Amino acid sequence: MMMVPVLLAAFLAALPGPASAHGGLSNYTVGETWYRGYDPSTPPEDQLNQPWLTQRQWSTIDPLFTPLSPFLSCNDPGTPPPSYIPITAGDVITAVYYYWLHPVGPMTVWLSRCPDNDCNNVNLSEAKWFKIWEAGLLEGTLELGTWYQKSFQRWDGEPGLWPVRIPLGLGGGRYIIRHEILSLHVPDKPQFYPECAHLEVAGVEEEEDGVEGRVPEEYLKVFPGGYEGDEKSIFIDIYSEENVNTTTYVIPGGPIWEGLGLDSTEV
Ligand SMILES: *[C@@H]1O[C@H](CO)[C@@H](O)[C@H](O)[C@H]1NC(C)=O
Ligand SMILES: *[C@@H]1O[C@H](CO)[C@@H](O)[C@H](O)[C@H]1NC(C)=O
Ligand SMILES: *[C@@H]1O[C@H](CO)[C@@H](O)[C@H](O)[C@H]1NC(C)=O
Ligand SMILES: [Cu+2]
View 1 (tube, rainbow, N blue to C red):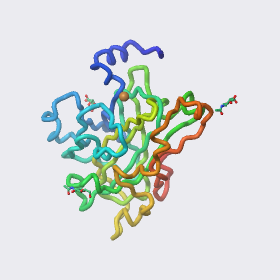
View 2 (cartoon, rainbow, N blue to C red):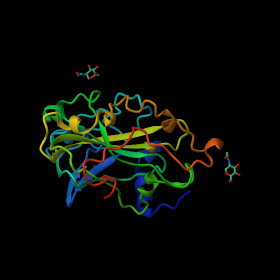
View 3 (spheres, helix red, strand yellow):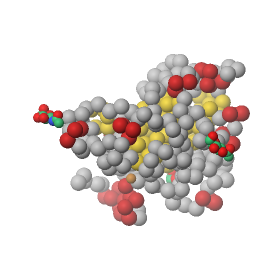
């Protein structure tokens, strides 16, 4: 067992039962501005219509256990928020987690352009997502090596911070941003933790064919469905004899769209 600092240990002890290991995305920051996220531990009626809310509703810190979940896009139930986070293409948005405790598996960030510039009426099973950021195994073996998910954990009571740059060259308009943590610490039993927020992006002038003309078709995925063919990376036993010396991991969901300028993985 790892030593847990007193403050965090007290926090964990206060959480109910076995759910204590789960979690989700609590807040977003852009520059110095904080955007409070949805909090599944307080009543929905105190949050859903509040003008400060920019994140879609997630009703529990529990994960989704299958890539075929109808809630894979934006968690359960994914109810849209009233407001948007303003951001300029090329700027960094940071996702804040209180707290992240799982160490193994990939992390990805996706965007979906909202039809008619309205993210409230998006059919999430038809939304087309493109990946803008990813990180998986940084060094070592699947079981004993360091994943980004592990390096992002904090054990000093501070929240985990996950900064990602919105690609330069993205068309201006409204988007849903989707952060997904996939945890693989239980053999052949993946845990998906997706959370979504609404963005108002100041970007380049939109062309007639919009972002889908700019982002090639091969990058666009729908969830569920987008992980077809990635089963080997999702249903995996990192502790198996077969994987004892494995030092590579293929992140599901295909390549990232890097935009037209800065590499969005460099923040
Ligand atoms: C961050 O999220 C937590 C949990 O939802 C909330 O209590 C807190 O007010 C948020 N912090 C800020 C600065 O918005
Ligand atoms: C959303 O899209 C799915 C898949 O195309 C479709 O089956 C469903 O009827 C749509 N829902 C609504 C409310 O339009
Ligand atoms: C893993 O590597 C060790 C050390 O090189 C070797 O002895 C062992 O046979 C390898 N196991 C597998 C399954 O490849
Ligand atoms: Cu968990």
